Image 1: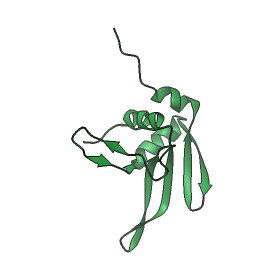
Image 2: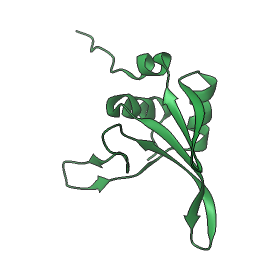
Image 3: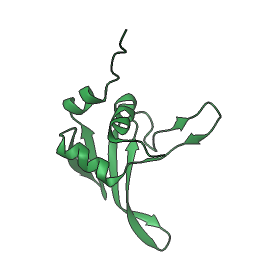
Image 4: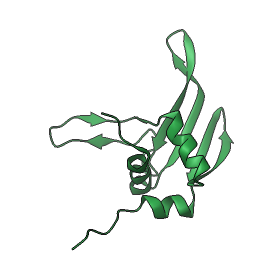
Length: 104
């Protein structure tokens, strides 16, 4: 199952995080571009746990979702930090990623 752009945006806002792009991530004998969500309080990655005890500690963001965020002005950047590129949420991105109030 693949989640959509809105779900990733909610994850980012909830974590107070940013997006990190590593264009030279080691992958076997080659490198590949890795796009991940990083939490403000967990620089190694955003950890998600399920009630059954499964956990994921690196949330990979599809490139097309990052492109959606850039075109919608939900992120600003990139800012280069070493070999990595960092995208921060904009006010618009934060507003659109906030949980919607439930209807009565």
